[in-house]
Image (cartoon, rainbow, N blue to C red; front, side, top):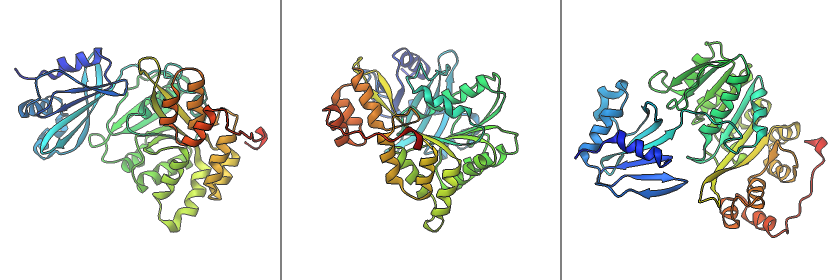
Length: 365
């Protein structure tokens, strides 16, 4: 009996799976609350894989279906969910990963994210980065921020994504959404043409290369509020990653440009709670205050983290602070706090009450 994809996705939706893995010659697997569960099922055949590809692939790609090795696109079951689909080759055979994209865009409170993030939606220009590993909730956080703007301000929001994930309904704002390969060839080109479409706010799905980065910064410098993502491990690491896109001879000038237009960096992880492993975000926040701007311009990135450690304000906090607060609130275990910490020695000292915290005066932040 042939594998019925839609029926399987509906059952996976009821099981609250975030990701569905479908490999040739294997039984399907689900990711639920961060862990993989193998399903007791018949193995997926080569014919099943081909049928799924033909059934789900957008018509724009069907003419070159035999040439496709890696591709991202959207599939939807009306009334159930949208899915970001990745198709790739796994030892010569096709493999699918379906990432669930809910119709409903949750707000910051529902996502258990810091309320301070709302402040980033009030800027008229500049750039905000949301960073983290794959599956850390970056797209969901960005969607929440974009929806705040959509509900609050009369703006034109343009998103350039690979592919379009959350779909926005026009509220006070109007929203134009463009997908790579289908609506536009690449992020750089998408930004170029978006600037001719009377935008106020732009969402650039991901900074992947120098050209995209410089185009996004130019948009931020010319009076637009830009949101984007990076795959990095921490806010300080994000600054180094951005710097690394630029040739060494131009890095000093680039860092001055970056410091002048960046509004903040948010780094997040999803960590398992004591509530049956349900995931909750741990969030590091670096808002570019005058002091941070000066440090970045001068290349004193080590000083940035020291400042973050000492800060008592909601606009600057380290991952350890977030994890420690979750631990103190009884939401995560000591082991989880240490496992997800970016500075494990400091985390251990915090838990044991040995961490020496010397606060900076609020006035210099």
